[in-house]
Image (cartoon, rainbow, N blue to C red; front, side, top):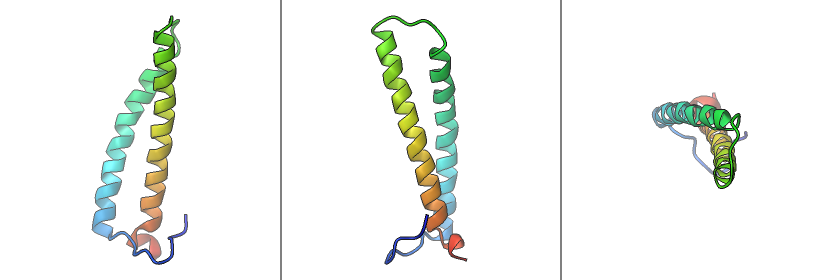
Length: 82
C-alpha cells in the first residue's frame, strides 16, 4: 500500500504502539472467530440462527478491517520508508 502524497509517515514509536494494539485486537478477534465457527457447527433454530448470521458477518467485517489497519500502519510507518 503506497503512502498517500502529502501525508507524513507515522512516527516509529507510534507505529510500534499501534502494531501492538492491533496484535492484541487480532488475538481478541481470533477468540470470537473460533467461537463463531463452533456455533456454526451446531443446529440452531430461529432467532438464534439469525443472531449467529449477524455475529458471523460482524466477525468477518472486523477481521477484514483489522487486516487493513495493520497493512496501513505498516505501509505508512517511518521505518517502511527506508
